[in-house]
Image (cartoon, rainbow, N blue to C red; front, side, top):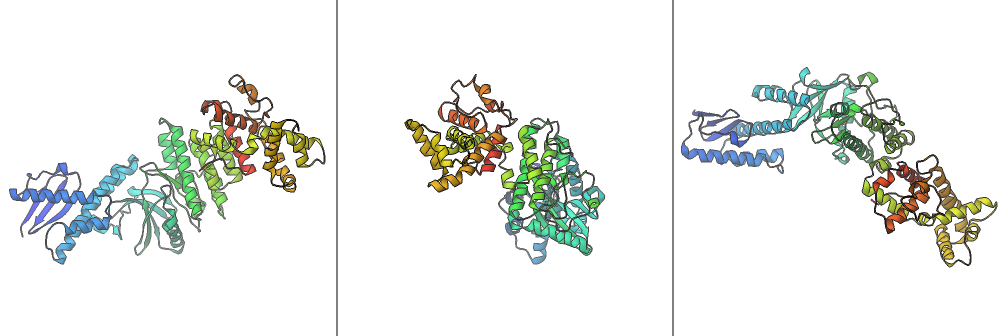
Length: 531
């Protein structure tokens, strides 16, 4: 049988009788040199080049799935083939797609250690016998210590490849009841249809052989602790840290929305992929590993409780926020002067109050200029804020005279002869309700509580003397406006509505203004955010 070999360095082809058997195709088409070491007639060169171009066109089309590519490739070479030939051709194209995609996926990896080991594994897998020997289902896996990413007791995680060239991390454990339960719980959590999220690790496959069970997920570049260590001196590190925090919390939000508890949030269960997406791993395990069996080679900064809940996840995530923002410190000190006041408040709130994850993501730490202006407008437009000077006066009247009804306190706060004052009185009474009984019932909650909160959240804050601080810039400050949190909010909002454009530097004088406003809004049931 006539066999022609085309060896162009990066390409090795062989041609048998009436069909072309593709053995290896690794690099881009510019490396093809048809006139090197080959016996092909001139009239065949164009056909051969067209075939290569067609192959590259199909395999580079991201819209096609792996199976679709194989089908298109085997149907488009224009040859009539028996079953044996068909299987050979299919295997050749499967090898081609594997090698092409594998090299492409390795190139985008940023962790040089992982990248080097992935290339070493791929070089071994270029050998057909080696591929066959180390294939488990749709996985290529070489269980050698050089390709171990991490060890968790008896469970080891290896670098591996899928048959289509996807880089994966493969957890491997012996088939015993404990590991079986562990893997099935992990598998069920990862397969949850509601967990399609760029901030949660992506499940790829579950395989097994006689002695072992395997779960494959997309391979990552760095564990959180590795990423922080490798990037501590990079420019714009604070923005990077905030991105890490937000990515972790978005992943936790998606877990909790799917009613999945993580239960073990720590630096080795948070990973960063090649596109710098932050992803959560290691969640949804009903049977938790013992302390000594958790991921090796890192001090645990998270918590693991016997009865994990959403609240315990929030507490652990709060510790991780501190870990990230402090540059990898495990001891959680919310008064750390290196952290800005909004970060300190977020961490303290998460650890001590454990709010729902949706509320966590609305904390002022995540507010940009647009969201800060939005909060000023939305809360500042509330009638309780716009008429706060009158409400404060009414509340003082009520406290000064025992037995006074709320509506009576309102009546006494306004001069009957003052027409503008009477209009304001009508607005103030309207805030309380529709009739006198409802007004008096709502008075303590709507007015007294509001004034008490405003006073409480102003105590020992940077804005406690805001009038004197702002008097040089704003000479027209309302002297009757209370010098507390809501008084400052009302002043800001009115300036924004009339002559002032939003200026973030103005708030640098009062760095605790937004966290105080946020806490007050939560306590009185106001929404700070439009969307």
